[in-house]
Length: 328
Image 1 (cartoon, rainbow, N blue to C red):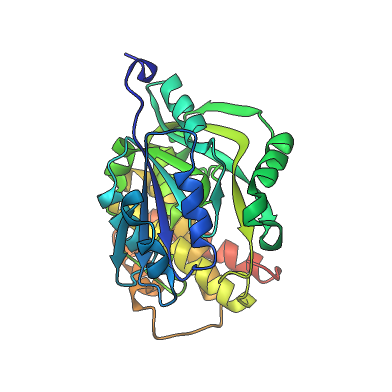
Image 2 (cartoon, rainbow, N blue to C red; image 1 turned 120 degrees about the vertical axis):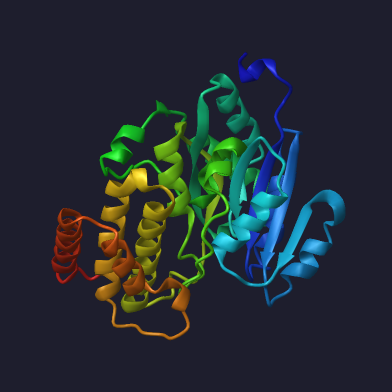
């Protein structure tokens, strides 16, 4: 039986927030104001120190609120997933926005094929100064008029992942939607915080989802990616490399630990990540949970002689490349 013959599935929109009081209400409102009616909005506050929690409380039982100590993005996503009941899970960063038709469009794609496990869409990049609460409808209309409706269609990339090929169609967090069943095989995520709080991030989820399931990619802009002075934008090159190095080393390491069948892709991600980590001169004693050297050592200890040599060569290759680059 196709999904279209079943009752409308519940969609959980999972918002993770940390100190985004200026943007959070707009994100929550966009999730609540979907044209698709069978939606629950789960908002996880990851130990914010601003007024985020007071703002969340104002929504009462219109949303599912989860308040927790600061533990990083993976920790927040784990808490949100545990609180969600939807058959379809859509991720939304607290500084981004969904168009009103986002859930409806995503549900239609899921219902078109019972084999679909994930749906990736796109978001229009917009400066914060151009996002005016009383003119959102005008902004939405402008985005719709310029959005591409070209669809790349159904994708099964699992064989390529097994061979170590990275997908080039995986967008940012707020464009990711998954079946609850698929995420149930990935969660709980390893709760590694690292320098930025996102050592385990959407990269881990995207790679594994694409490797484990079949999905659909759409080029239609169904959201807004907000340009603003966020954490990453304000980092110098050395800190950016440290952050990138932690994310990729940690992602590669934990993919190899939890899904050893994807060793080829985990080796490539870890090798590139560790090379970038080595290229950073930034040091801190506050990210012991993202100890890249310890992860590499453990990874190599469980590798064959051939795999150790290959990993070392990958690290060497990216180290050389990074010497001639002024960016990550």
